[in-house]
Image 1: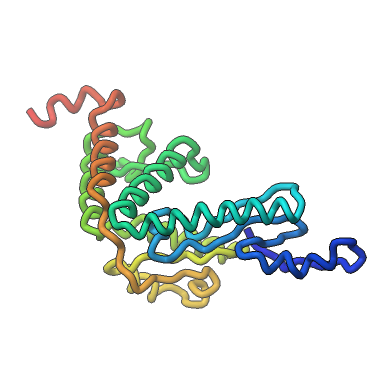
Image 2: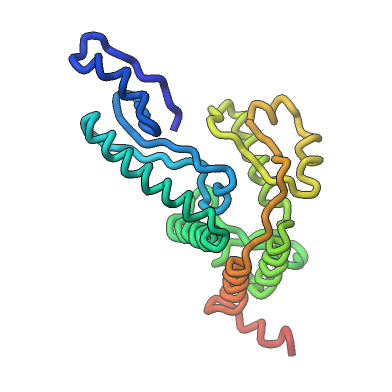
Length: 247
């Protein structure tokens, strides 16, 4: 959400209280509506899967909004305190990653369908397929397992990150409003790829490669990816052709 500064109307009866409202920690005003906004500490962002908490208070009075914001602030104070424990930090990171994946699987973006790649392309065959159209699912599963292993080591393939960069550049070329930074981990080769792009478009697209490297994937999430690969390669959609592959 793009925020705009509150506009004070001196004819309103509650004008005298407006200057006090904006002083309440994490209580923000956008077009006359109250909401809670708080930045997630940077060290916790990758574990929680978000950069900020932002919750609308709804159509409520100022006093009710204050009450709601104070309650949420106390809850998140506790979350931050709990996550200082390394074991709880790992548990929270795993839980949030699984929750984010579940949201993607249950409500996929129709403009960004999931594609799978074969380990080899036969003559006249395209490179990527949807899951329903996979001609040799076990080959796609092999690619997924290789990518999972790389992510487990903290060096995932660059293809997905490059696709995000290309899409952002397309947005710039279309003249779309760019209101969020595209911040990417410092993976081998990624900085070099960005360096050879049109830097004016990189700047307009708010594309950056962070100094920090990518954290290796937790064992539990690595296992999740291997299970996904197994389901793709050897699930109900797997062709009988596979029966002779390993024989």
